[in-house]
Image 1 (cartoon, rainbow, N blue to C red):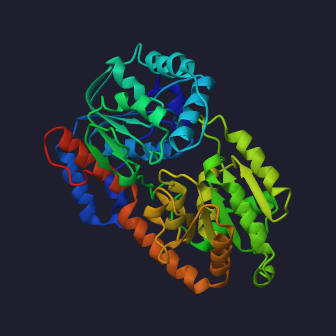
Image 2: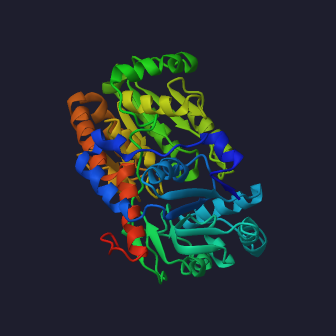
Length: 436
């Protein structure tokens, strides 16, 4: 098991220094900063740990690399542990992920007993996590609870859409889940039957001070992307439609491409000459990413107006700048626990066409921050693409609404605040007000 003193962690992040919450004052206001300090005041020198399956790639790692230093800056001893597993383990847990989100995929008793459970056991052979509160994220380390190597309050945090979870896998995980002191889901509809412990609702969030989420002017965005345009032979004068996500069967990039190809045939759009850029990274705990990337390349079929990019350099700055200069951001997943890329795009003031599923519906408010569509409804997707490309005033209004909506609901300071409230409750200090 790796933790935030390991060489792997240091290679990725260096020595993450504690972050002073006052740095967020200009973004969230002095009153909110003081409230967070008040909540943390009785938690100073307490220990708060996180356990997940990867230090890089995906939304959990993205959030934890901000949560850990903020908590440490508040005087809380916050640590981050990451389990190790074989390629076979990650292949199996990826299937877990897919099956929980409704796909029909196969697994064997050996997968469950000899790989999944054995990997969880081995990670805790020589590791004991002693903390006032430990948050264990997602299915990969869920079974670690039974090995008795935790001390303190334990919470299982589910980041995926479990609303249509396969009963066999859910029933396999349920006894482990019910060993925790409580569970956290992003929204009420994800909570399945059989959970016997308290359930809390905390939505994911983005860090507005990170390189990716720094709010920049459109001019600054274009300047940052000067080399990007040249390298990938993209004309910056053409209106950009952007999609960013992992290459994953649920991310539905093939439908985005189909809709864009249909849009290009529209007479009212031809003069605008829009360009579609799809960007994705590979997560270390997702062995299917490269295969999906190749499939999406085949769907694009060398269309000169479609760019499918993988693991671009200078990722955070380029992604943030692309989100700022894009006319439209599109994210039409078939399943989505939350969708932090949607949050990031909205924070840059770019309206989103999002699918009417999962956590996307918490962020894309129809006609206010963007538009919701059914994931495979190509005609609706094309209609809203056309509308946003041809109505710049409406784009600007939606973009302004989006920034304020994210500021009020989905910044990392709100996430930390809710965790502090939960921790105070678990330690007998307060009652929570966000229990489902």
